Length: 176
Image 1 (cartoon, rainbow, N blue to C red):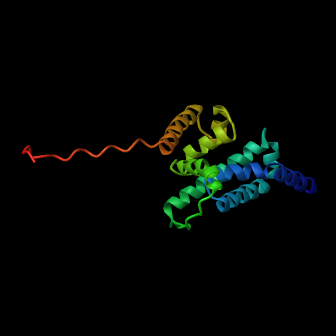
Image 2: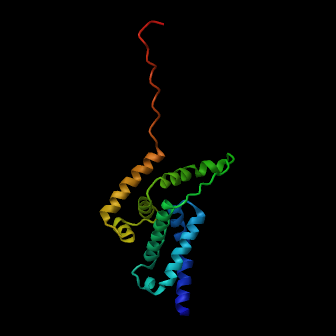
Image 3: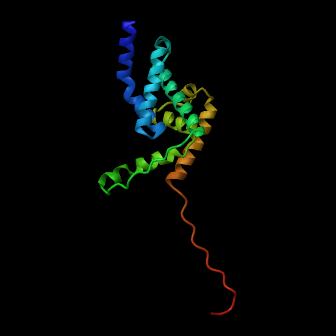
């Protein structure tokens, strides 16, 4: 059992940071991301021998992470939602540097959990369609569909259509 513990500890040390980044992209919140990683790693620990026998153990744990996230989102949809109001931030150079990242996170927040997971796996984790399909337990065509729809939604969110000009007021035809 000591060897299993050492193997699991080495796995966590090697992969925890990457799992946390993925979880943050899925949740958009550092605290939720940490909770998500902790839950996924706890489940991996309970089934560590099965995880070790997997062809790619990190893929197995990434799947646990995604399943935990999707379950959390389903529970959230049916429960009470707490909204946070944050104070305005002071204007500074760091805001310009992070503006696009903030816009991208807001755009990702508009996606369904499945579409968000597909985009995170495809473009952040750099997985191919087949590997993404395997992780999510769906077909490659489903991954392509979610990729196309998710990217279209992100593009719309990042580049909204220009405002329409106000129509000219109607006149009654009589000279002014």
